[in-house]
Image (tube, rainbow, N blue to C red; front, side):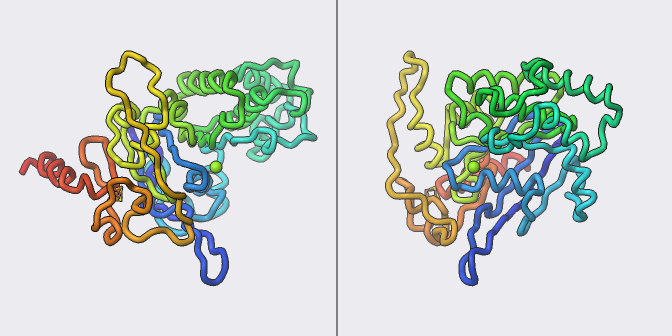
Length: 330
Ligand code: SF4
Ligand code: MG
């Protein structure tokens, strides 16, 4: 599969005041293939939403490169506007992102207006009825207002709105974390269904590792503005390598009681450091149970240490060299 999105060394810094810079996204690289779901997990404040918004162009990047379908991300506002048709976002809080004074019809029609789609009224109504039924609501809902719906239904409206422009890539920023647990699975199921039907590509941002596993082909783990591990979701859950991933996973109960290997709960000491003043060397070193002397001095590279498995940790430096030797056949 071809990459739809290539992100290289992406940085998004916010200047807080004259002396302080918040490094929300600090050198992130990954590739997203067409039709794939890449999950991004991390604690709140790790920069995952900023990453999504910077990719969408809602924030101006500070440094790095974003390529969409093999082309550099457009520089001009006008070209970027065209690209917004292809990339859409689903937000965490559908209530905050939907104008309370607009009917469902208007909410879905708005992006069409902005991009000049379906100027013919009859065709537009037809398309909007189609969209609303695709997300599991009915045309009777079109004249109602957001407050008349439950949280799960509102998220469905948000999804219909995102689909209105027939995007290829959807960035879903914690689309289910504001919903009741019983509703979460339904919305995830809907997203998967839509992905299958429309061949959508997803960047699925979440802090909940268990939902991400169900949703994603690959998962990237973020800590303090950086990706620390990225691999297929099976590998990540069965064989995590980065000490931070190990700790995150150890907090999830293993659903299968037959699994012999009991994961020991790893409790991380201390708080996440401030992204205004991140630690030298490895960003995780102030909380890492396995930190070594080198970790405070040298920042570990984000290396591919086996096929499709990237880790930023000094513990695996040699593994990377071996993998490279094997690949070039030395
Ligand atoms: Fe821990 Fe060092 Fe690896 Fe960072 S590089 S995760 S501090 S062992
Ligand atoms: Mg967020």
